[in-house]
Structure formats: structure tokens, C-alpha cells
Image 1 (cartoon, rainbow, N blue to C red):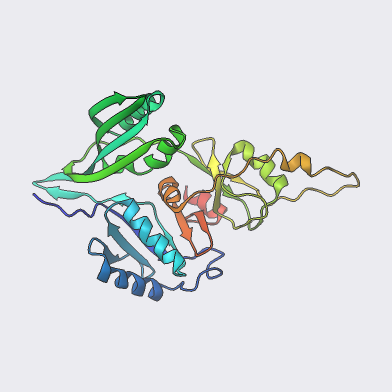
Image 2: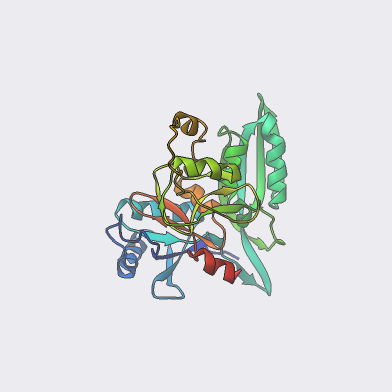
Length: 300
């Protein structure tokens, strides 16, 4: 049986954050619908369907990279939107659930081969071939597309940017059991305001920050990755209390760790099911679906 090479989908929706409409030129659902319909004329692999509400559109394509390219094009054209985490598309055949698989070729330095085999095995990757040549390890894996979502960012970190990964859609095969990926928690902004170096100095002890000082944030925005597996609400806008004693600002700024700036592809791989990526012509922000911290606690 031949199946469509459309393997993943995500939800495009109108930006409804506190900063909506401030940086983009096209922000309404009508603008989004017209732009997606225009893209259908040029991209034969793209599929667009109406979502659960008039402000949402389910967009399907050939993997997360294909969809990320479309989002980046729309950003540069002045569109402002928010997108959900990519999900694979399952299909049924003779009563069995099938999912897309991909052939993956990896080239890394030999010392990094152990961690690559371990993480690919955890994500249900099947090792097809392996070779070592001139200090470089070459791997060929067959892996469910679900297992690749979120792996590329980890791969770059584990190999310190020296690894090469190429993938190619190979077909639909029986669905594997639940794939365990690295669970992470997020650092969520406590209030709307501008970040300060004094507040970030205390927040960076709880994880890796995604924003630096002097950045405008809003309540419910994801400002970092927590060192724990659960979300932590942090106040990154706290001001230092003024006293009559002089303090050297160098002591604060020297201890401040530079933030990790996420690209669009890294942001799509990072977010969880309860998070969204807000994209504008000027910014890429991560946020919770429910922005109010009190409402999120009640939902949990």
C-alpha cells in the first residue's frame, strides 16, 4: 500500500497573548486563512483544514521541518500567529494502527557514539548498520517519526554541534508502544513587565534562561527550562530595593549566565502539549496555553 508522505500536523491560530498585534502587520484569522490558501497553490504536499474554532487551522505537511519553513516564511512577510507542538499522523490498515517511520543517517565523532545509540534506542530507533572510519562513527537507524520530534536539539547539545543527522521518510509501519522522551519543566513568568538582571540572577539557579535583562515578558510566558520535571513560576521582573548604600553593578552582571536563544525549529521541538510558540516578525516567544497562573493551577 502507498500512503501519503504527509506525516505531521500542527495547529495555526490567532495570537491572543498580551503582546498581540504589537509587532505584526497581519494578525486576524482572515489574514491567516488567505495566506494558507495561497500557499496551497504552490505547495502540493501541504494540507489545511479548519480547526475546532474559527481562529484555528490544522496544517499538515512532510514533517516538522517542512512546517517550520512555512512558519518562517509567514514571519518574514509580517504575519503574527501562534502554533502548537507538531504531532504525527496515524492511519489505519486492516484494523491495525500505522505510523510514519524514517531512515536516519548519523555521523558523529567516536566518543559521542555511546550517547547516540542510547538515546535512539530509548526512542525506539532500530540500528540497521554501523561503521567506524577515521575516528568518525556512522549509523543508520529506522525510527518512528514520533521519536525524532525533539531529538535534533538534544543531538546538537550531546555532540557539541559536531554531529550530522539526515532523515528520509520511508513508509508507514505498525505503531510502537509509548515512546519515552526526556521530560522537562518550564520556568514561567509570574507577571507582566521587563526583566531585570537582579531578578534573573536568582531565577537562573532554577534552570536555563531563555531571556536576558531588559526584555518585555508577560504572565504565562515561558522564560526558561526548569532543572526539575515540573513547571516553576519565577519572578524575572523583580526590582532591587533601593538603599542608602552604593552597590557595584559589575557584581551582578558578571555572574549572569548568557541566555539560550532558541531558533524556531528548536522552539517547536521544545514545547510540551500545554505550550505554544508565538511567532512575530520580530520575536519568537514560548508561552503556556493558559496564561494566568491561578487558572493553570485550578486546571491541574
